[in-house]
Length: 113
Image 1 (cartoon, rainbow, N blue to C red):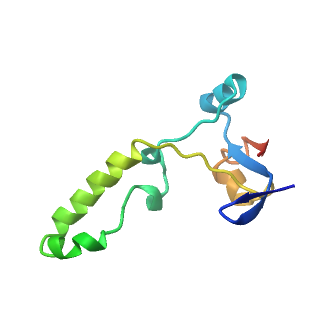
Image 2 (cartoon, rainbow, N blue to C red; image 1 turned 90 degrees about the vertical axis):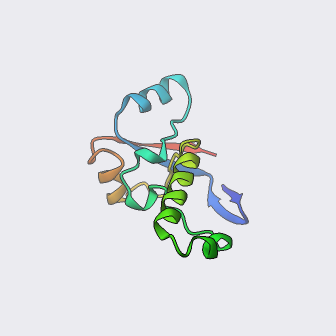
């Protein structure tokens, strides 16, 4: 069965790779999903490095350090208010098993949407 999200069709089953952690155990036994703090990500592209807003470019052009610090502070404050949970449509992705499922020692949960 397919489910439509933002005008795209997706399989109604999604997968979550995970190591065997206390968050995973609590999620299973207490019936909820864990959403991670983006500040805890180990991905350098997900550390809240925002883009310069075009409307402020002229104001900050003479002080790029101040601009960078201002954007970083804003991104950090926004990132601290959200949580992220990642899913996949692939059951046999080697990278997902090695990175997200604790070097093949974890598991992959299947959810029906």
